[in-house]
Image (cartoon, rainbow, N blue to C red; front, side):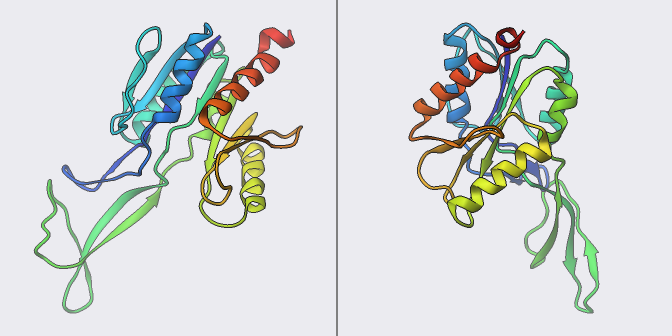
Length: 223
């Protein structure tokens, strides 16, 4: 089966030397790509340029991305019916920068621009603009694929986190949501619409569950 795995962080530039990003290392996605390839799947790994994880070697095909827009372009360029599964584990920034302003003595805001925005002018105000959500676009790009999303939750209870994971299934049209983060607690939950969540204590256990899901729900298995 042809599989696409996204992993690692996007970044959004403030100027030519500063950027907004997150702490994702890409380790989980790189490990998943390696496991998928080890059992015979054809894997294309899209890995964030800032990821610290070492990408797997052949037969995985690795391409790097930078911003959310660049990741979107790479995914759209792969669109078609030949992709059997997409594992969207990348940590996509929720925001990009809009305009940057300096407050003048009279209270007015003056737009600031530059290849390297000057820091000696005092406090700056930067707009944070929501980035497009890529997961809901996957169904249009990959109409026959099993689409697996990720949900990293920090606030609330485990029940709250599970409810948000289930909401992702509905809103994004995905088959599976992999849930983790402080709100859920240690390990991962494999959340689907038609069965109770399956807890995975480790990345290794998660990989095994995802492989099993792929076997049970692949187009070839259900044809």
